[in-house]
Image (cartoon, rainbow, N blue to C red; front, side, top):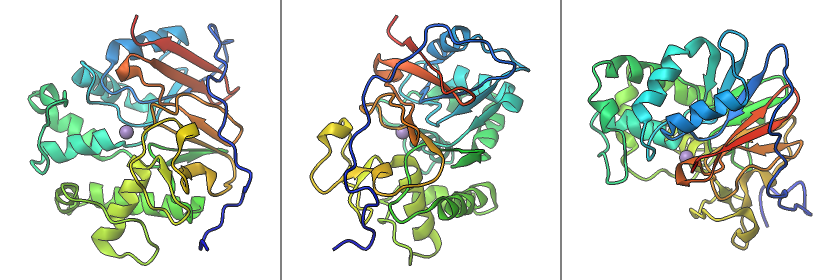
Length: 290
Ligand SMILES: [Mn+2]
Protein backbone atom coordinates (compact mmCIF):
# COMPACT_ATOMS: atom_id res chain seq x y z
CA UNK A 1 0.00 0.00 0.00
CA UNK A 2 1.30 3.41 -0.94
CA UNK A 3 2.07 6.08 1.62
CA UNK A 4 0.75 8.67 -0.81
CA UNK A 5 -2.34 7.31 -2.52
CA UNK A 6 -3.44 8.99 -5.70
CA UNK A 7 -6.12 11.59 -5.13
CA UNK A 8 -7.59 10.91 -8.56
CA UNK A 9 -7.96 7.11 -8.94
CA UNK A 10 -9.57 7.56 -12.35
CA UNK A 11 -6.78 9.64 -13.76
CA UNK A 12 -6.72 9.81 -17.54
CA UNK A 13 -3.96 11.13 -19.77
CA UNK A 14 -4.83 14.58 -21.16
CA UNK A 15 -5.57 14.79 -24.86
CA UNK A 16 -2.72 15.26 -27.24
CA UNK A 17 -2.61 18.02 -29.84
CA UNK A 18 -4.22 20.80 -27.87
CA UNK A 19 -5.68 23.42 -30.21
CA UNK A 20 -3.44 26.28 -31.21
CA UNK A 21 -4.29 29.63 -32.70
CA UNK A 22 -2.47 30.97 -35.78
CA UNK A 23 -3.04 34.60 -34.83
CA UNK A 24 -3.72 35.36 -31.18
CA UNK A 25 -5.77 38.42 -30.33
CA UNK A 26 -3.69 41.39 -29.19
CA UNK A 27 -3.81 42.15 -25.47
CA UNK A 28 -2.54 45.20 -23.58
CA UNK A 29 0.13 42.96 -22.07
CA UNK A 30 0.87 39.32 -22.81
CA UNK A 31 2.85 36.79 -20.78
CA UNK A 32 3.98 33.97 -23.06
CA UNK A 33 5.15 30.72 -21.47
CA UNK A 34 7.50 28.97 -23.88
CA UNK A 35 8.86 25.44 -23.77
CA UNK A 36 12.36 24.06 -24.16
CA UNK A 37 14.29 26.26 -26.61
CA UNK A 38 17.52 24.22 -26.36
CA UNK A 39 19.55 26.62 -28.43
CA UNK A 40 17.05 26.82 -31.33
CA UNK A 41 17.43 30.59 -31.48
CA UNK A 42 16.01 31.17 -34.98
CA UNK A 43 12.91 29.10 -34.13
CA UNK A 44 12.55 31.09 -30.90
CA UNK A 45 12.74 34.36 -32.88
CA UNK A 46 10.12 33.09 -35.35
CA UNK A 47 7.82 32.23 -32.44
CA UNK A 48 8.25 35.71 -30.96
CA UNK A 49 7.27 37.15 -34.35
CA UNK A 50 4.27 34.83 -34.57
CA UNK A 51 2.93 36.10 -31.24
CA UNK A 52 3.91 39.72 -32.01
CA UNK A 53 6.09 39.87 -28.92
CA UNK A 54 7.01 43.47 -28.08
CA UNK A 55 9.88 44.31 -25.77
CA UNK A 56 8.66 46.59 -23.02
CA UNK A 57 5.06 45.52 -23.37
CA UNK A 58 5.07 41.72 -23.09
CA UNK A 59 6.78 39.19 -20.85
CA UNK A 60 8.28 35.75 -21.35
CA UNK A 61 8.13 32.74 -19.07
CA UNK A 62 10.56 30.03 -20.13
CA UNK A 63 10.28 26.44 -18.90
CA UNK A 64 14.04 25.78 -18.85
CA UNK A 65 16.52 23.92 -21.06
CA UNK A 66 17.36 27.20 -22.73
CA UNK A 67 20.49 25.70 -24.24
CA UNK A 68 22.11 22.54 -25.63
CA UNK A 69 21.60 20.11 -28.52
CA UNK A 70 20.38 22.96 -30.75
CA UNK A 71 22.74 25.00 -32.98
CA UNK A 72 22.57 28.46 -31.36
CA UNK A 73 22.89 28.11 -27.62
CA UNK A 74 25.19 31.12 -27.28
CA UNK A 75 22.85 33.38 -29.26
CA UNK A 76 19.89 32.20 -27.18
CA UNK A 77 21.57 32.81 -23.85
CA UNK A 78 22.90 36.22 -24.88
CA UNK A 79 19.47 37.34 -26.05
CA UNK A 80 17.89 36.27 -22.76
CA UNK A 81 20.54 38.01 -20.65
CA UNK A 82 20.10 41.18 -22.72
CA UNK A 83 16.32 41.03 -22.19
CA UNK A 84 16.54 40.05 -18.54
CA UNK A 85 13.92 42.57 -17.41
CA UNK A 86 11.27 40.82 -19.51
CA UNK A 87 12.29 37.19 -18.93
CA UNK A 88 11.27 34.83 -16.14
CA UNK A 89 12.70 31.36 -16.45
CA UNK A 90 13.42 28.20 -14.49
CA UNK A 91 16.53 26.05 -14.77
CA UNK A 92 16.39 22.76 -16.65
CA UNK A 93 18.75 19.81 -16.62
CA UNK A 94 20.69 21.10 -19.64
CA UNK A 95 21.14 24.50 -18.00
CA UNK A 96 22.56 22.85 -14.87
CA UNK A 97 24.77 20.68 -17.09
CA UNK A 98 26.17 23.85 -18.63
CA UNK A 99 26.88 25.35 -15.20
CA UNK A 100 28.67 22.15 -14.16
CA UNK A 101 30.65 21.99 -17.44
CA UNK A 102 31.73 25.59 -16.99
CA UNK A 103 33.16 24.79 -13.56
CA UNK A 104 34.88 21.64 -14.85
CA UNK A 105 32.67 19.24 -12.93
CA UNK A 106 31.02 17.64 -15.94
CA UNK A 107 32.38 16.86 -19.37
CA UNK A 108 31.08 18.42 -22.56
CA UNK A 109 29.72 15.31 -24.27
CA UNK A 110 29.27 14.25 -27.89
CA UNK A 111 25.83 15.71 -28.58
CA UNK A 112 26.41 18.83 -26.51
CA UNK A 113 26.53 22.15 -28.34
CA UNK A 114 27.75 24.27 -25.46
CA UNK A 115 31.35 24.91 -26.52
CA UNK A 116 30.65 28.35 -28.08
CA UNK A 117 29.30 29.48 -24.69
CA UNK A 118 32.27 28.01 -22.83
CA UNK A 119 34.63 29.84 -25.23
CA UNK A 120 32.71 33.15 -25.29
CA UNK A 121 34.43 36.34 -24.07
CA UNK A 122 31.27 37.21 -22.08
CA UNK A 123 30.97 33.73 -20.57
CA UNK A 124 31.21 34.94 -16.97
CA UNK A 125 28.31 37.34 -17.40
CA UNK A 126 26.21 34.60 -19.03
CA UNK A 127 27.06 32.00 -16.37
CA UNK A 128 26.40 34.45 -13.56
CA UNK A 129 22.95 35.21 -14.96
CA UNK A 130 22.16 31.51 -15.40
CA UNK A 131 23.29 30.61 -11.90
CA UNK A 132 20.83 33.13 -10.46
CA UNK A 133 17.74 31.70 -12.18
CA UNK A 134 15.12 29.95 -10.00
CA UNK A 135 14.00 26.31 -10.23
CA UNK A 136 10.34 27.15 -9.60
CA UNK A 137 8.32 30.28 -10.22
CA UNK A 138 4.80 31.06 -9.09
CA UNK A 139 2.52 33.96 -9.93
CA UNK A 140 -1.20 34.03 -9.40
CA UNK A 141 -2.59 30.59 -10.24
CA UNK A 142 0.48 29.57 -12.28
CA UNK A 143 3.44 27.52 -11.08
CA UNK A 144 6.24 26.55 -13.47
CA UNK A 145 9.07 24.01 -13.17
CA UNK A 146 11.18 22.30 -15.83
CA UNK A 147 10.64 18.69 -14.72
CA UNK A 148 8.05 17.88 -12.10
CA UNK A 149 7.04 17.62 -8.45
CA UNK A 150 7.24 14.50 -6.29
CA UNK A 151 3.94 12.85 -5.30
CA UNK A 152 4.29 13.90 -1.65
CA UNK A 153 5.12 17.56 -2.42
CA UNK A 154 2.49 20.20 -2.03
CA UNK A 155 3.25 23.60 -3.56
CA UNK A 156 4.58 24.95 -0.28
CA UNK A 157 7.17 22.19 0.03
CA UNK A 158 8.03 22.42 -3.67
CA UNK A 159 8.73 26.15 -3.32
CA UNK A 160 10.77 25.59 -0.17
CA UNK A 161 12.94 22.94 -1.84
CA UNK A 162 13.46 25.09 -4.92
CA UNK A 163 14.57 27.98 -2.69
CA UNK A 164 17.02 25.70 -0.86
CA UNK A 165 18.63 24.68 -4.16
CA UNK A 166 18.70 28.28 -5.44
CA UNK A 167 20.32 29.52 -2.22
CA UNK A 168 23.02 26.89 -2.57
CA UNK A 169 23.63 27.57 -6.29
CA UNK A 170 23.88 31.31 -5.69
CA UNK A 171 26.00 31.09 -2.57
CA UNK A 172 29.69 30.57 -1.81
CA UNK A 173 29.35 26.77 -1.84
CA UNK A 174 27.86 26.56 -5.35
CA UNK A 175 30.85 24.58 -6.58
CA UNK A 176 30.30 21.90 -3.96
CA UNK A 177 26.77 21.35 -5.25
CA UNK A 178 27.71 21.53 -8.95
CA UNK A 179 30.47 18.99 -8.34
CA UNK A 180 27.90 16.54 -7.01
CA UNK A 181 25.92 16.74 -10.27
CA UNK A 182 28.53 14.34 -11.68
CA UNK A 183 27.09 11.46 -9.70
CA UNK A 184 23.69 9.82 -9.35
CA UNK A 185 20.96 11.56 -7.38
CA UNK A 186 19.19 9.75 -4.54
CA UNK A 187 15.46 9.17 -4.84
CA UNK A 188 13.57 11.90 -3.02
CA UNK A 189 12.56 11.10 0.56
CA UNK A 190 11.39 13.60 3.14
CA UNK A 191 14.08 12.50 5.63
CA UNK A 192 17.06 13.27 3.39
CA UNK A 193 19.48 15.92 4.64
CA UNK A 194 22.20 18.16 3.30
CA UNK A 195 23.51 17.59 -0.23
CA UNK A 196 21.39 14.44 -0.71
CA UNK A 197 18.23 16.47 -0.11
CA UNK A 198 19.31 19.09 -2.64
CA UNK A 199 20.36 16.50 -5.25
CA UNK A 200 17.10 14.61 -4.89
CA UNK A 201 15.11 17.85 -5.19
CA UNK A 202 17.11 18.87 -8.29
CA UNK A 203 16.40 15.51 -9.93
CA UNK A 204 12.65 15.91 -9.37
CA UNK A 205 12.48 19.58 -10.35
CA UNK A 206 14.58 19.23 -13.50
CA UNK A 207 14.39 15.63 -14.72
CA UNK A 208 11.18 13.93 -13.59
CA UNK A 209 8.60 12.74 -16.16
CA UNK A 210 6.89 9.71 -14.70
CA UNK A 211 7.21 8.07 -11.30
CA UNK A 212 5.64 5.50 -9.01
CA UNK A 213 3.41 6.59 -6.13
CA UNK A 214 6.43 6.72 -3.81
CA UNK A 215 8.42 8.89 -6.22
CA UNK A 216 10.69 6.31 -7.89
CA UNK A 217 11.79 7.37 -11.36
CA UNK A 218 12.62 4.81 -14.06
CA UNK A 219 13.69 7.18 -16.80
CA UNK A 220 10.70 6.55 -19.07
CA UNK A 221 10.73 9.09 -21.92
CA UNK A 222 7.81 7.98 -24.14
CA UNK A 223 4.35 9.48 -24.44
CA UNK A 224 2.17 9.42 -21.32
CA UNK A 225 -0.22 6.90 -22.89
CA UNK A 226 2.61 4.35 -22.81
CA UNK A 227 3.53 4.99 -19.20
CA UNK A 228 4.89 1.81 -17.53
CA UNK A 229 2.61 -0.09 -15.20
CA UNK A 230 2.61 1.30 -11.64
CA UNK A 231 3.85 4.65 -12.95
CA UNK A 232 2.04 7.82 -13.90
CA UNK A 233 3.02 11.21 -15.17
CA UNK A 234 4.33 13.03 -12.09
CA UNK A 235 1.39 15.45 -12.03
CA UNK A 236 -1.19 12.67 -11.93
CA UNK A 237 -0.49 11.47 -8.39
CA UNK A 238 -1.68 14.51 -6.52
CA UNK A 239 -4.15 17.31 -7.02
CA UNK A 240 -2.64 20.74 -6.49
CA UNK A 241 -4.28 24.15 -6.74
CA UNK A 242 -3.85 26.32 -9.80
CA UNK A 243 -2.15 25.42 -13.08
CA UNK A 244 1.24 23.70 -13.35
CA UNK A 245 3.40 24.54 -16.35
CA UNK A 246 6.32 22.28 -17.24
CA UNK A 247 8.79 21.34 -19.96
CA UNK A 248 11.32 18.51 -20.34
CA UNK A 249 8.99 15.91 -21.84
CA UNK A 250 9.11 16.17 -25.65
CA UNK A 251 7.10 12.99 -26.18
CA UNK A 252 4.32 14.46 -24.03
CA UNK A 253 4.04 17.36 -26.43
CA UNK A 254 1.85 20.38 -25.79
CA UNK A 255 -1.27 19.37 -23.89
CA UNK A 256 -3.53 21.74 -22.02
CA UNK A 257 -5.90 21.10 -19.17
CA UNK A 258 -7.02 23.53 -16.50
CA UNK A 259 -4.49 21.95 -14.11
CA UNK A 260 -1.49 21.15 -16.31
CA UNK A 261 0.15 22.67 -19.36
CA UNK A 262 3.08 20.83 -20.94
CA UNK A 263 5.27 23.09 -23.06
CA UNK A 264 8.05 20.94 -24.57
CA UNK A 265 6.89 20.05 -28.07
CA UNK A 266 10.27 18.82 -29.33
CA UNK A 267 11.57 21.90 -31.17
CA UNK A 268 15.14 20.64 -31.00
CA UNK A 269 14.06 17.33 -32.58
CA UNK A 270 12.33 19.06 -35.52
CA UNK A 271 8.96 19.31 -33.76
CA UNK A 272 7.38 22.58 -32.70
CA UNK A 273 8.14 25.40 -30.33
CA UNK A 274 5.12 26.32 -28.23
CA UNK A 275 3.99 29.54 -26.56
CA UNK A 276 1.05 29.55 -24.14
CA UNK A 277 -0.42 32.86 -23.00
CA UNK A 278 -1.20 33.06 -19.30
CA UNK A 279 -3.78 35.84 -19.67
CA UNK A 280 -6.22 33.99 -21.95
CA UNK A 281 -4.68 30.50 -22.19
CA UNK A 282 -4.17 30.76 -25.94
CA UNK A 283 -1.51 28.54 -27.56
CA UNK A 284 0.64 29.36 -30.57
CA UNK A 285 3.17 27.03 -32.19
CA UNK A 286 5.77 27.31 -34.93
CA UNK A 287 7.34 24.39 -36.78
CA UNK A 288 10.98 23.97 -35.95
CA UNK A 289 11.74 22.18 -39.19
CA UNK A 290 10.72 24.91 -41.62
MN1 LIG B 1 15.08 18.78 -19.88
